[in-house]
Image 1 (cartoon, rainbow, N blue to C red):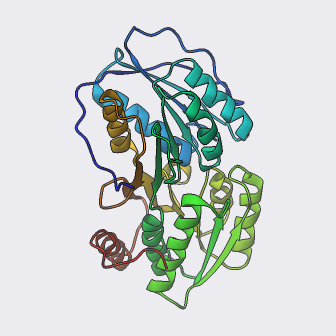
Image 2 (tube, helix red, strand yellow; image 1 turned 30 degrees about the horizontal axis):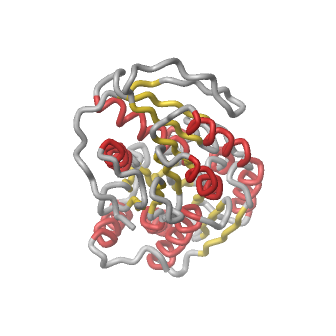
Length: 335
């Protein structure tokens, strides 16, 4: 398991190609120059979901931009692939087309990667969030220590709630969704044990209606600070916008644009260094067998504080101190 070794990559030129259809699926990518490296990614939600899928697509396009242009690498994607058999078909299809790197960006895709990767030993596969490479030499795994940003958001929520009640809604109790919420609850309790935390789980990463209903229940019970994980948090944020004085704490991507008037802070997943290393390894002939974890210490995790929100000095100081404490090991984000 790696805590992300950051490699310096020689000049690569990346180009966008491949347009997906809104309902899940994709159009055929145009022909590329001989020798161009090709990456394809399959995602459970949209590239602009303000959460998990957007975090990966943002990283891919950022690497593309910084490497300088359209001649060396083609990016293709399939979005809204929440039906796992459909996603498995897309993953196999990309590998069959000769893509050099195929990414299954969703913890629900693990069994599909495990099944498909042995059939394509010359293709690099990556998937997350998990650290299991299944013992396969052409599989990378990746995850985020989401509890770290969860803890920081919990510190802020404990110091900014006026009602003393915080509401937390998760999708499914697995992977980074669970560790984020565990860290958040721990941050609240370590900061102010008198603050009450109510938790609920919808059982789905994509059920916006269930997330909406859960947030409504939290607010009705007195919560004035909310958080949650997955692309379905748009439901919770929507309810918060309709309620006076409710604050939101985000994760996976900067969610400020969802509601600039109430999003206090967001934990951001930054996959760019991991992607650079996987690309460099592929070029050097190292096909997989390693796992990566985003943390504050390796800059894979970052906090975005909304300048439009008046965060009290005490809360901001405590949040920054928590980040440093997590980095140097003085604070354990998990309970």
